[in-house]
Every structure is written in C-alpha cells, then in structure tokens.
Image 1 (cartoon, rainbow, N blue to C red):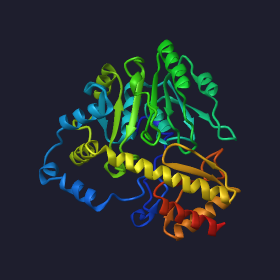
Image 2: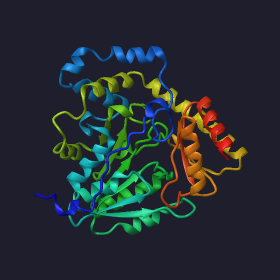
Image 3: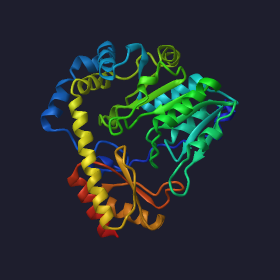
Image 4: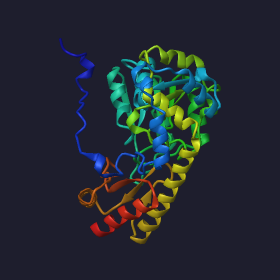
Length: 351
C-alpha cells in the first residue's frame, strides 16, 4: 500500500552526521557556552532514578510555567519541541484545499507541515535588500487562508513585526477567521511578546522553544500558548505525555532559576557587540539585532562557502549561504565575547 497521494511531493532526508559535539557550534542557534560547574552539578542532581524509571508528572511544571508567564494554566500546552507544537496546529486547523501564508526563507518545516495535511503553502519572499513589507503578507491572505505563520523575529533573515503590524493581522484574522501563529522561539533575546493578547484574539496561537534562551535544544521541548478553548482543541492531537520526564524536570529547574536565562541573554548581547565592531572594522555589512544570531554579508556565495569551510577546519561551525536573497550571507550563532573574537579571527584570516 502506498502513502497518501498528496505526500508524494514531500521529500525528507535523514539528518547527516557531522560529529558536531567536539566543535564550537555556531551554526544552529544553540547555546554556545556551557553552564558553570556548580549549575551543571545541580542539573544532574535534579534528575533522580525515579524520574527516568517513571512516566512524567506535569502538574509542577505547568504551575511554574503559568506563574513565570503570568497566565492561566489552561492556556498552556507543552510539546515535543516547538516543531511538534507547530505540526499540531496544522493537524487541527488546516486541510486539503486550504492555504497557509508563510515567509521564505524561514523555518523549513512550515511548508512541509502544510503539505503533510494536503494544504497549499503560500510563501512570501524577502526582497533583495532583506526587507519584507507587511503589505505583501496582507495581500496574500484570501478566503482560503486558514493559517498565517509569523516568526517574530524571523530567521535566517531577521524580520521583526511591530505591535501595530501584528494588530493589523490579528484584527484581520478576527474578520476573516484564520489562525495567526506567532512563533516566539527567540523570546528573551527579543523580549516583546503577544502573550497578553491570547484572550483578546481567539485565533491567536503563540509557540515558544526551550532550545534557544534556555539552552536545552537536546531535550526537544516546546510550548503552545493560546486561549483555553484553542488549547483544548490542540490537546486532541497530543500524545499521552506531552514531553519526556527528563525534559519536565529540567524545565522546572530553569523556571526556578530564571536568572540563568537572563545571564545568558546578556552574554549573547555582549557577543553581538563584538561581532558588530569586528565586522565594521573589516567593512563587512551585518544584518540582525535581535535573536541569538547575526548575518554577515560577504562578496558572493563562493566566498561564503570558502569561509564556512575554513572555519570548520579550525573547529568552528558556522552556516551559509542561504536561499535568495541571503545568498551572500553567513550566519554566526552568538555567544561569549571570547568565542566571538575567536570566530572573527578565523573569518579575518580566511578573507
């Protein structure tokens, strides 16, 4: 028996093995620096044998999440990474014949999820100067639109949506009845949020990740935030346990120590200043002032590939080039000042 016909156009591949763990990983927007030894020891002590042997218990983590975020518990739903959070939105709210309005380049799984459910991905591209007028998104919304995905900020090309821009789209969603997904994966690096609007706009869903500012990419943990009725709908497609027990416990750990998140955000911001200063000294244009990464514009794609390859030879993983219009750009995940100076040394030598 063959798979459903609409899945034929989807091509998926296994992730290649790059032996990344012994490198300085500046290519996938993960946490760059390890925690202090005493914090790492505390984290390990937080994981008892009972946590590993037992199915996860969720009450404490939901209570802490609600307290930290200042919302009701019934507006929250954990997920196996923000990617599965997004997948559940597509499973619940869109189907064959519907359209999803997406940015490109952006998170690669948005159009894949649309195709998985038989919907059409309407991808709105950035302009040559890396801008994306809000009017291009509004013009793409039709009577067939069921989901609009707005990463705020977007990656790899940064696009931050203002409160007024979001309000215009949310107001339109109330009139035309489509879901607005505001992907806040880089929250805390970019502190603005639409979380206070979840009970004002019934079609608003916010997704977040514990991979970025929390530094827990390996746990694959994410979060859905919306009004209680929408969360109840999303629960219909969740597994028995939203996430695993180790993830539950370590999220609890960090929710009780939010100063660790704040400290890492400050570390990243200092690292950004290093890149900006060093790049300016080399005459390299940069793009991005939020999130935990930055784009550097080189002469062409070949030069980007050369620099990325030479960085890898020196033990530093960076990424680029990207799809149009970021074909001349490499991306550096931001981290401590020392490591940012090291990667800029590598780039300067390569050029």
